[in-house]
Image 1 (tube, rainbow, N blue to C red):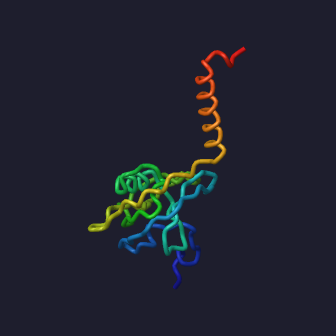
Image 2 (image 1 turned 60 degrees about the vertical axis):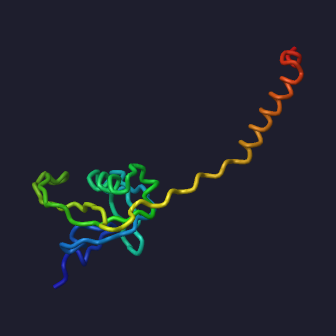
Image 3 (image 1 turned 30 degrees about the horizontal axis):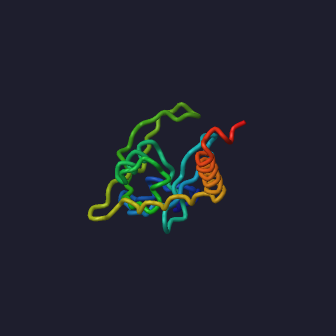
Length: 151
């Protein structure tokens, strides 16, 4: 018999997808999506066709592992995902208590988990031109005796 989770596929990795084990993943870029009316953050993972939906616990786990709380710098980071301890929550729509498992992350033993730093953004040529113009004008003004150019 097919399982419900196999019939109704999710766009996000679920704790049940880990089948009680863990998975080592390389993180990719992030995106913002709307999920049941809420804005959520989703990380891409190399070789995976589903995204990794960030919860606050998972985001703090990854930030601690990678030594950086800026998700723009997580691309290329390597973490081990596992299913956290089951916990009881109240369903928003029905008000019923239900048990869930969140995905958590831990450091991969023996792995370099910090991604290489991204190169700095190139400086806009227009900004360089304006700075050069200001410096040249200031030097010319000083060379002319300072106040001589002001009338």
